[in-house]
Length: 137
Ligand code: ATP
Ligand code: MG
Picture 1 (tube, rainbow, N blue to C red):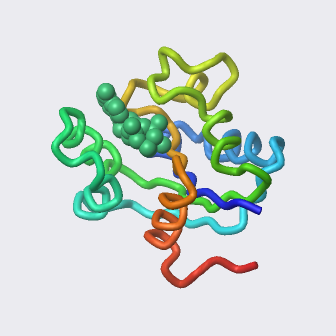
Picture 2: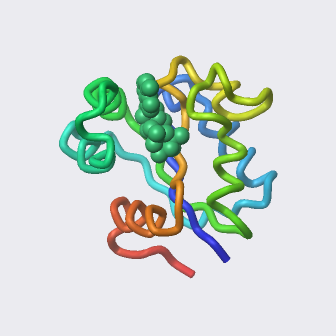
Picture 3: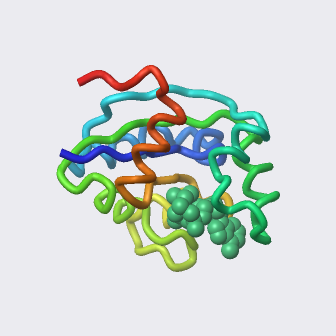
């Protein structure tokens, strides 16, 4: 059984979409096995997105991700990583399929409402980043 790290980004938290987004995960068979809210510092956001350092959108991304509270969850289920990315839709909301989280809650390419891990390796690193004390069974 697979786990993935999901983030409801500051723009979606600000528009009170936490409940709607969590409902979509649960309706799709993804169990929420850990969750917390936090307001990341610029340093935390830079560390989380370190792989994107040097890219043109990096400063805007870090500014946005540290602009307000986020809700971070660990989602568990069969094929959780791919399933979550399918529910989120394409990174660019203009290309996100109708009915996906990004189609419905994104405000721009950067403010695209949600994050989901893209591989088992990154999921493990990202879960450890936000839940260093571990996640219950
Ligand atoms: P995430 O990692 O947030 O789940 P992703 O894996 O679909 O999204 P990445 O390529 O990892 O996309 O980019 C990380 C985030 O950086 C995107 O979700 C988006 O917020 C922002 N981003 C990526 N590319 C661009 C771009 N060309 N212009 C503006 N923002 C971008
Ligand atoms: Mg990514």
